[in-house]
Length: 164
Image (cartoon, rainbow, N blue to C red; front, side):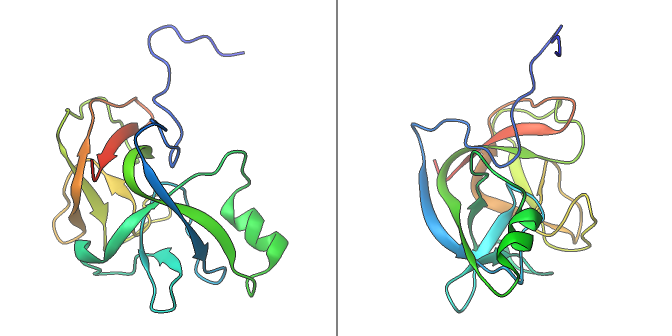
């Protein structure tokens, strides 16, 4: 059992935080090109699947954010179950509020601050498509029509408004 003495966590990355204000669409995910985390920005491929960003993708190719289903297993576990030759379904948020993880403390974010997406120099903890709270020269783009709704928590979870 965990006691919260000061503040509860903001949420779980990739989870819809306000279900009354959103538009999500079902998509087919490419089992051979999977997302490493929920809550990452993605794009549509030429064959109609929702896939992760690649290096140097501009913000104009982003079509939504990968939604964490509930209940869920992790994407790598799902790929192990269905195999990497069998594509599977998922959801993409086109409009709404989502909890994301920026990879570092989010307590200093302010309401209305721009949302940045990593599009170069990925790391294991911050892959391409990761949401960040600050610009990094030549590594991020601004996510159009997205802002932070306020301060997040010390573990990096924060809420964003996207296409609202």
